[in-house]
Image (cartoon, rainbow, N blue to C red; front, side, top):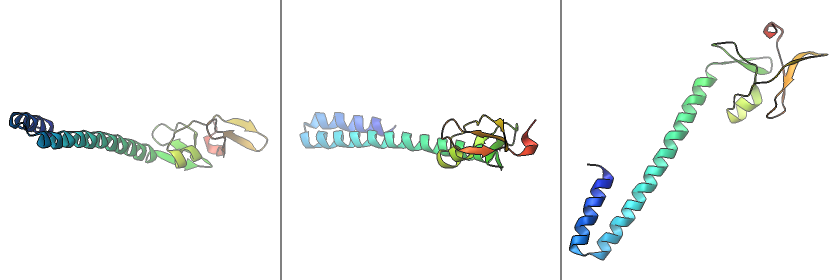
Length: 119
């Protein structure tokens, strides 16, 4: 039997006893239980996000000014967006006078592409 079933049963007993104070306190407990349930759900979602970020982060290599995925060599990804907000934002690259590089469309930071990454 779960917490909410127990509270429901206690409320039914309290109604039978016609104890208004007890019914009121049980309703308060039920409200608090729902608040705890909501907080628990939010914390679980945050934990999943942190675990996902950790998994992605362990698969990134930092080269030049940008990140690349180790498993499939995809990238480049913006180092500022990842380091600050844990967002994996692809950086479009172009050839400039100084070499290959690109500007993040999300945060506008600049990154140089290492020569060995040019194909």
